[in-house]
Length: 168
Image (cartoon, rainbow, N blue to C red; front, side, top):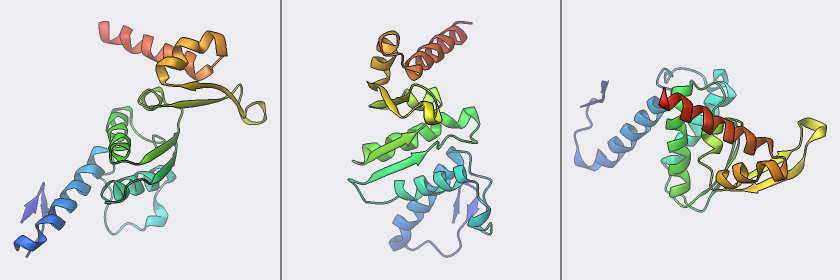
């Protein structure tokens, strides 16, 4: 049997159908978020932090568990811009399975898909740590002038830029 270019010998029995479907889904998810280059013989200790997070995300996506809280720290780190939308789809799929997904992120593409944003600041490091604004991404953009939310201003700028690029 072959699945998208991968050979599986001796897996024709119907009782392994669900396993084969699970393997197919995992392989498709690996490829979808830019990890299709990984090989099974690569030691996990050689993976970058971003790769490890994305591997865990795929593993959890295939799990039957629900009502789980997942925390991802900048899962888009090291990703090509074209792969961010696919990663966002995986984050949404984890959420849609009935889980809570907390993401620490700076990329506007990923912040924009959040149900709820907590903007910490006003600066970085010791100049931050205060809740500057909370709400949906749309609410952060709308209140950026009032709250001083750098994230709200950033989302507004990214949205304006995307609109301008789309109209060119």
